[in-house]
Length: 285
Image (cartoon, rainbow, N blue to C red; front, side, top):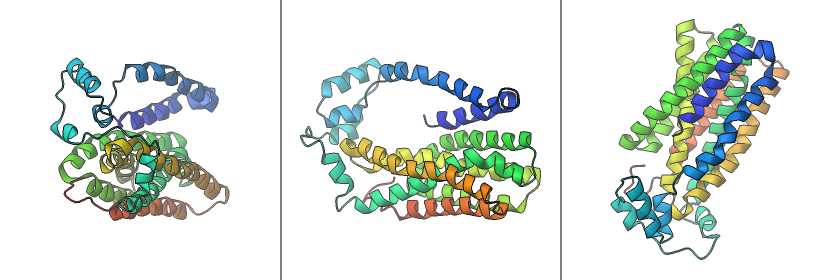
C-alpha cells in the first residue's frame, strides 16, 4: 500500500522534468491538487479494519466485511478480541505506560530521523547534486531514481519483514541508506551514483513506510492508531526540519561533503534507535 507514496514522488519528479522550466513550480502545485479531490471518495469506499471492529465487539460488522470480500476472519484476531474501551484516553496511557514507554520514545526518534531524511532529500537532492557539479536535468533524474527504488523497497521490504521481522529489516535498511548518502560525497561515477541513490531511496523512504506498519503491529489493536498518529505527529517535526536544515546548509554555503554527511547521520541515528526498540516476547516483528 505504501508503495503509492514514492510512486507519487516519481510522478512529481517526472512532471518537473517536463514542466518546471516552462511553467514554473506554481503550475506543478496546481497539478498536485488534483489527486486530493479523489481522497474523500476513496475513504468512503474503504472498509473498516476487521481487528478494530473486533476490539470494539462489533463482530457482526466484521463478519459482514469478510463475507463481502470473501475473507475468513483470522484466528489471531478472534483471540485478540477485547471488551469495549470506556476510557477514551486508554490508548494514550498505553503509550506512556511502563511496558511501552521506552518503545514509544525510540519509535518517535526513529520517525523523526526517518522523515527528516525523506523530506530533506526529496526537497534538496536536486540542488545538492547541482552544487556538486551535476546538471539540473541529471539531478531531477536522480530524484526519480530515489523514489522508484523507494517504491520497490517498500514492496521488497514488506515481504522481507514478514520473513525476518520488521525491526531487523528497518535497522539494516536505514544503515545502508546512511552509508550510501555518505558515499555520495566522493563524487562517484554515473553507474555507482545511481546505485547509491537507489540504495538511499530503498533505505530511507521505503524503510520509513515499513516503519508505519511495524508500529501498528507492535502496539495493541485498540491503541495502534493512536501509537501511529502520535509517532507521525512527532516525526513531522523531522519532516519540517529536513527541508529547513537543507536550505540553511545551502544558504550558508556549507561544503557539499558535510551536507551529505549530515543527512547520513540522520539515517544512522534512525538505524540505531530502530535497533534499540525492545522486542516483545515471542514476537517476530
